[in-house]
Amino acid sequence: MNLPKQPIQTRDFLDVVVVGESLTDVVISSDGTSEHPGGSPSNVAYGLGRLGVATGLLTALGNDERGATIEAHLRSAGVTLLPGSYSQNRTSSATATLAEDGSANYNFDVIWDVDPVDPASVPKVLHTGSIATFLQPGADAVKTLLQQYRHDCTITYDPNIRPALLGSHAETLSTFEELIDLTDIVKLSDEDASWLYPRKNLDEISTHLLGLGAGLAVITQGSQGSLLATPETRLTIPSVESVVADTIGAGDSYMAALIMGLLSRGTDGLAPAVLEQLGRTATMAAAITVRRPGANPPTAEELRNHLDQLVAT
Image 1: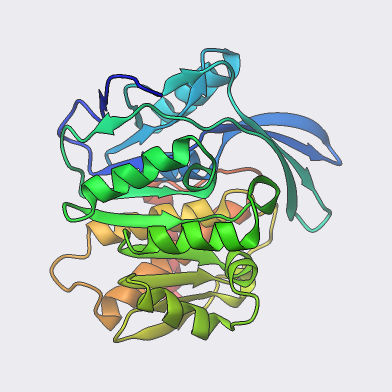
Image 2: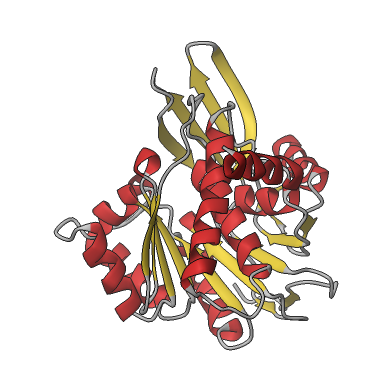
């Protein structure tokens, strides 16, 4: 669409800009049906806001009740909704049907498009992922944005694979690998990794991602912990034992805490001690999230207290 370019942000204080879809999650469980703000990038932005990180979100909402609810939800965590985010006729939705073990199966009604944008000021981290990087016409705008920012800030990416919304495996893999070349840090779940690379094990996959240009490859494995790999270091971080209410938003909480850690790592880059701290912090954030229903990430104080308790035991 040939629209005037919008500035991606109008304030200089944002440490992180997240670009991607916001959805209304319709949750169906044995207790009935409820609606909650969701969408992986939106959840990451909300998680960052809860952690006290100055965060802006560029998304695609409808001017409707669901859109207003999502905006209020984001603002409650201090997230800035960026100009151009109200661009659709309706707000997208995802229906999650919960199994008895808390796992979720999804059905989607999603429209993704964003206006062309110019970076008005550069954040420290640009994060994107999920449906927004695959679903046209908005996926092309996201790719262009990554190309604009490539050498100016840290770029993080979580593909959050949703097969029901994707094209062929070959097409999806090609899109994913093209974006890896534009990013610094990529995070996948083990399910994402297995879907993208069914013939490789997780070690092989992480090595492949590094070979494509990622500086850090992270693969989360639920109760089996997570793998963090750089060209120099490979660590496995154990999970934190939790009674699971459901897994909604756990990966997004992990991603938000990982980004927070990247912002505060100082001058040690991705040294082994930094990687271990990043992994343990992100793992704890995910563990807190799965203990309560829905995408309900921890605050900075909650996360700090839980980490302190873990060290003390």
